[in-house]
Image (cartoon, rainbow, N blue to C red):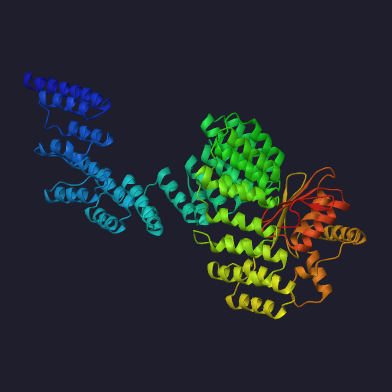
Length: 628
């Protein structure tokens, strides 16, 4: 039975709890400093101005509303005679939130000197700030203090914040060590490290950790999908996205952008249609929808399905600069110059201001379409009419345009007058034009800059060697090949992918004999070669500037990856469908000629995407006009 005195204190405690609860509610509804001061006045009137519990809440609300610490929270803190660890920590958090890490650390030192022990939130506030400013040395000192003080090494929140701090400071392995030593881990622990590995490009460590993780949230799944896509591993990205779908996990805009990017890289129509269905079923709001639909336009364009890209574009209820730019770029990469120009004019009439990406697309279209005068006018209008300063990428388009029509000297002069330093793309465009027009003199100028800017890019050396060989300058060609050997440069294996009617993607490498249908593929190629020979085809042996016999060159050319992919496509796609091939390198002159002839004798449309552009082969001609 309670004595009268105990009843009095019990009642008082109950009343104080009620009062504190009411004050907390009022603080949660504060919108500015005036509101906070009003609640503080009530605290003073009620005589609980020494209550650390309530004042901690007041300072935290002040921090949330971006009230400068020295303007009010500090004076509140200074009036408390015996601040507890939580009140100290609230002020430390206030300073670190303002970016005043040094003042936060000074306050932490003062706290320790007064014999007040830290709480986990003290360390998480300071560590988070260390990560934000990249001060790993201070972070390590705090880490040492955590170990010395004891009691916090096994704290989940402290562990997660330590991982975050080390990752942000660029010390991923230290973050991994903290992770490995944590006795308990949650979704945040696993996801933080998975995301860190994907961002660093160590996608295999990320995948290993992901597969070991007992819990996988949407952020972790998305990180894996986007990580593989950003590391040019589209098949793996699609595989993880399919696993994500099967797990029942929700997808957001970021996930879908990542998988759309993977589809665009892979260039497979089957996956493109699958992803489009998922996007349409997701029912995102207008803002997200326009971003996703613009990405779908880009995806379909890169998959060689230009009509599907245009259908998505036309169906969009809202179009912005990204939508127009995606479609214009799509038309450009497929050689549909007139369509790109027409859409650009429509964009301007609809008061959608073009940006730098738009101009890259429309200038590329002018170049691919040989529209010299139109290209000159648009380039001049960039800064004059739209306030867009030409970048090296825009100059690359102009050099490509001038080079296409044979104005190599003018293209060189344009480069010399550039107000910004030309990058490899600019000189590469000039070198490519020199190959087409057989100008080894200007080619050497372009190559000398490329060898300096991109010393390890083997493609530049190969192209220069071809130019010398085509001009009969065998000694110079030999010197280039010798340079390649001395530098230890190794050409990336040429590969080509083709999609069967069933949507299965098959990849071939030059000289590949590993495919189970190799014998049938060889037979199809031999038969096709006979038909082409009867139609006048002769292999372009100059495509192989090596000291080999003509017969050896013919055998090597016949087993180029795109030819193997074409033969497989002829065997495994219906006669009324297009054959779509994606090659990782530039298509060689002989394969280009071969594809032209094949489209004529087989009466099939062949679409090849190399690392330069799309080639639409139809009835013996190519959309690129033999310039690529």
